[in-house]
Length: 489
Image (cartoon, rainbow, N blue to C red; front, side, top):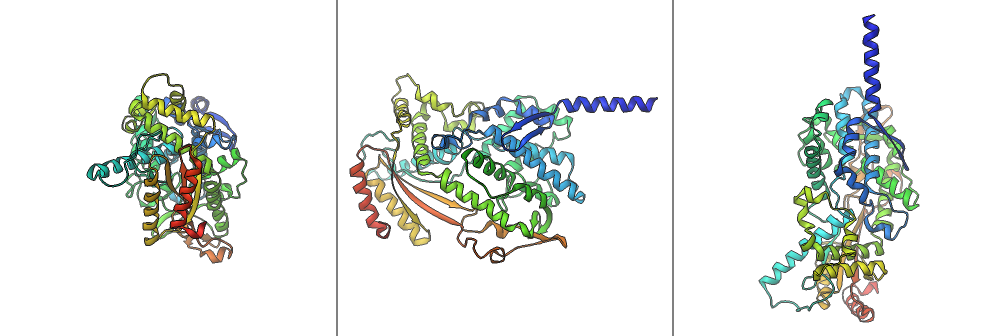
């Protein structure tokens, strides 16, 4: 009798717990089931904020289908993280992956993008970097006011400073704010109790390490170092974050992707490779991984660095710089109470500004140009390959052009790669054979296919023009290009 009562009690408790789970219908992955703790995180203002930050930033203004946001992407990454870590746990019980490990990985996946600012990478990759460049140039001008031309006032916020900005070269990253905002969310929403209920109250640092992987990780020992490769893989760049955003971006853009993340998860195993416990895959999956990096290259080339998208990004960055003294945008990265209020809605806040501040009015005028499709003019692009001498030449050419018309010319370089600069990321991947699944080794590219790439990064220099005198600007750019890259004319 007592046994039956105990069984009924356990059943009732289990059913009550099951009702706390929540199911989401996702356009990419179908049904996604979230653990009660994850539901608590989703139901916080800090996480709900991601509904108002588009995944592709201003890409929506070029690709009308790109309306998806960071909220749904984060749910997708969480879902894939669960699939991968539970697959490893089931296939390799000797890894001693605990339920707490699984839950921590899911939390890191869910919260990895909490810290994105307005317009996603425009905030950290363009706006903040431009601000830092402008500060450096202002310091240089203070040291020597006699050098260089003296530009007059103009519509560009970089008037009086040279606009030299380099994509994907920022010191501050959104992962920094993701960790800060995670701490803020944890404290302000009273999540200590539910984290304690599921035995992970002391795992906060481990979760943040998986979001922003440090050089030396302390949350888990070497035998579980593979857990740091699931959400943000610094070893190879192969992680569930990319699995989701490649699939999701392609889905909404109408672009076909040849990479199959389900096959990767199916064949993933943990092996000792290059002295570490790493996530490896079957030898026959090498070509599938090249497809992953091929779609990365394609998306950057066709979508993320589309010339019109980049033009609008530069305009929004200019508007944000002008509005910064009033709206305190750049300083908000050190104030999570302020930062959590920043979303893409800042665009309308500037666009519909009715005050008298001159800088805000200038910012508003830039956004009005976007609304009327009067965008910064793309003038030219130059394919460059950097070495020591070429690097000096590029810098000299950039300075030369921007000094000819400092308030209007923007010179910007874009790197498109497989994610590891000039290196082949597949060289860092361990592959095992079915007859010896515990031993992983490198596969040379020529053993996969003779048709695969030998160069893994290209760099493009582009020139944009803020002003209205397009004819004069074109002559200036033609003369400049003839001087430095005559073979590209």
